[in-house]
Image (cartoon, rainbow, N blue to C red; front, side, top):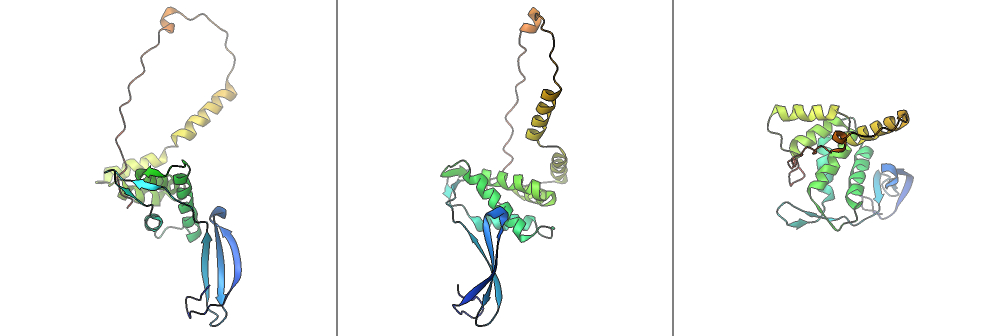
Length: 200
């Protein structure tokens, strides 16, 4: 690899290590001519799905745009470059997981917010405020209150496990006519689309 300082073609690797949960290799290199040191990152190049915008148009996945949005959200937060790259890789894994060639653009924002919520909650609120286009302080307050609540999936799983562990067999009894009649389930209105079309 050519030296980025003097342009010499002879450089050597002093150190290599896995980062980003094994998704990247970080190498410390040294130029044989000028002895300057620099860092390179090696990762597998995988095909990402194209994005379908709200107006129906298609555009290629832009990794630099995604990295920029995540990095701006984490500005001045105690998060290392390696953690940012790991977050980026997890987002990309989420987007590749369905195996589709095209996905809706809003799924990118959803994936980023899911990862930022686990990584840094301040960055999560920053990202959400731009991505969801908050208009006043009340929207910030609602989002912060939502952060304080446990995730729905985890709560249901925990409740189900607790009920299963503590369940005791009950004597069977013949149900009455009233109990046989099923009550109509309440109709839940469709939730509004909280995500915009653009990622920051």
